[in-house]
Image 1 (cartoon, rainbow, N blue to C red):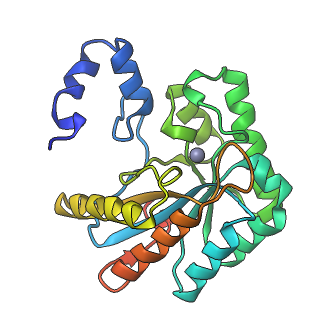
Image 2 (image 1 turned 120 degrees about the vertical axis):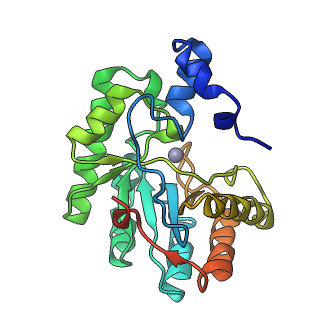
Length: 241
Ligand SMILES: [Zn+2]
């Protein structure tokens, strides 16, 4: 089946950013109407595991153990208000050699957030993560993938490259790790056929509260690593910037 990008959404946006067009520009991961973002380069042999909405004391430690056991590094887009509560867990992510990114302070839809608040969401998180890790944060993923030109400009002005993805499924609500794995694997195959690496989104936390159950997501990550660790190279996003 053709994806929406191939069936005329490009034409729809060209029709003048009507409501449907605006939603496409603001929410569709492949859209560059509101500015370019990092998705995945033409390196079909590479996979980036990225985890959003942590740090989560209930599941991030197990995930870190699983990654350490196979010597694979991932990228973690952290929610600032959680990082502030569990700074030791942020440092543990860093000490594992993983890349840490900014996922806003409170996970609002930034396409519809006032400018001053957008700046505060990004800058407070930036400051908090830099203070905890002792390093500047260079990557930003907008919550829900929602953005507008001001959001992307603000991220860049704070020294961050905006990142989206090209492989996602509803791992936050899907109880079966096997289903999550199968859906992501089909996207890996599709991206590879098109000549691209895959930028995979999974969730080790939940944006509504600390402590969300992410057992299926962590199990799916482990299974994806088992399937692909000898045929592909797992990378962090700084290798693509
Ligand atoms: Zn998120």
